[in-house]
Image (cartoon, rainbow, N blue to C red; front, side, top):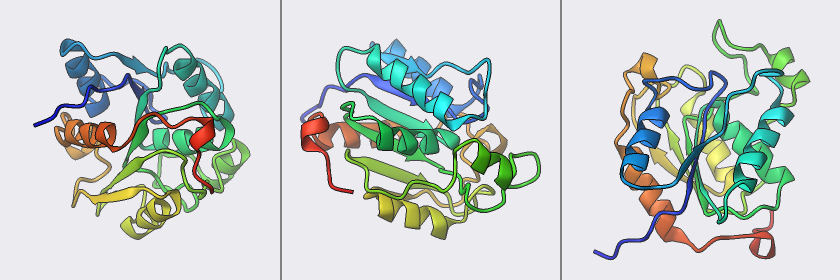
Length: 204
């Protein structure tokens, strides 16, 4: 089988930042052990709920690389990615968007409320078509988003929707840990296209 060389990988965590037993952390360790170039958007020390600050952190991470990266985002990291895509023309190879939350509706206890999300720039969720290939991996029983809403977001973004079944929020609390399917989805994105930059943007 023809093997496509993986581009640099940029991990975009959610609001909780670095979690040692999270699949994104384990994936980064495994890819690095395989000799892949992996960067992780660093956790914030201040303004942790500010969407613009998190978008700027992603832009700085991408700017530090010598070639277009493939983004691997989870939870709020998905929303960081789509907000970033509205503001930056920087080229990327694609994005794996796993378990996006529905910030336009109330979240469970212990998460930011609607006013906090609105005041910090998270809502309304962007719904313009992304200018790069993307895959949305969605859970049927995610406590942070109904499957139907995630499906609608995927359609608006022009993303391929992958139904993961009942995997909760795809985090350690739901038993993940390692998420082995991430690697095959990254490989699929790597094979989809050459880097897309400012000159090849899709129309929103």
